[in-house]
Image (cartoon, rainbow, N blue to C red; front, side, top):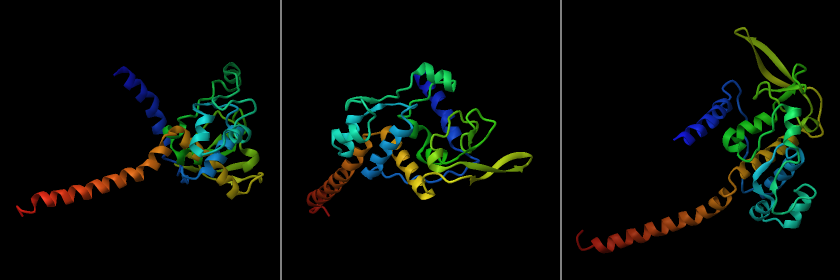
Length: 240
């Protein structure tokens, strides 16, 4: 019972906050059958996230199996230099250094999509804006006073917040592009969507197998229903 209460205390605050009552979340186009998207998302994660955030509940070997990729391709195109195919996705950052630089150790993101939700993550990654009052010069419309720097600013470009007072309280009405990034808006949207797609996948890798098996299970149930119905008619034909 105590363990259950502890889990609830951890999960509920995240769930409540992730609802984002004051911010309309954008829809993430999650498609776990899109292997190319998952492969791009894995590359995006290793390049821009793994430096700080580990994903210790997934191994490169599992990615190769689930996505139908050659192991050498995973090691050469996705995994960081020196990683082995059986390695977990560990961050290279020393926890002590992380605590010193950020004030806390960046969390593992293996289950972040299950806690926050795909739409929350998609909107969050697109909602950084310049804020000189913050330690890293940025804030986030979805996660106010975020302690994370905007690692994607070169791709997206910088944004500024348009703020209006509503009932005496400052409210961000929209984000305005300040300068152009390396990617167009459409390209950046796809980049973020691929990354979130990958985060949803690593939150429950077995769902790929479960969904692929689902059609066979449904076919079996349908076949069994037909056989049962015909058997029922045969047994009861003389009575009716």
